[in-house]
Length: 275
Image (tube, rainbow, N blue to C red):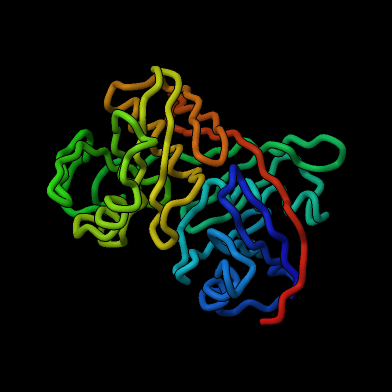
């Protein structure tokens, strides 16, 4: 099977062309391909598929084989892949995901896409929509785990997020606290956890514990959730620069409710693997 290895700010993916290969059950395949010792190695598997309602359909699978509703860094790699590999010549495309249809603006130079601006849609803030137990919104709420108390804001950008603001994110025990929140009973489908340090009202630093993957160097939907949570808690402006371990993303929560994310995507190599 042919594949491409890509990354968006070091959030890396194996990308397969579903137009060519019959992929009836990609979940187990994701576990095999994403394994960093016995496979290609990646934070997720992206499958490019046809769509009846958009230009393309994206399916994204975590390293544990579970399917994610949406992936912010992955969808930028998806946009670069379909353009660079000649599946489209359009600079603006629509992509069907389990979190709805997303619009991508592709910025190309020299015949290849360099950066992508993604309309991430509007955040879902009511607990049943996230999904999270209870009613109403969870903004600056209290959460007790591992003998510690945190303030969190929960946001869905098509997938669930728990945003926690901390004083110094570099030293925060993400690998200790992250998995305990990921599987907390308040989030029935588990939750991605963002730990965020506010540098200024226009700048933040983020680390992410991603459900089904562990700590990743970048999370696009998480960065969008951080932008929303920063506004809701009065910590940041509606337009921010977010420094993640793998690179920077520009976020803006517009007055019409849509969150826009702009960042790079890179193809590292192509290859073949026996599966």
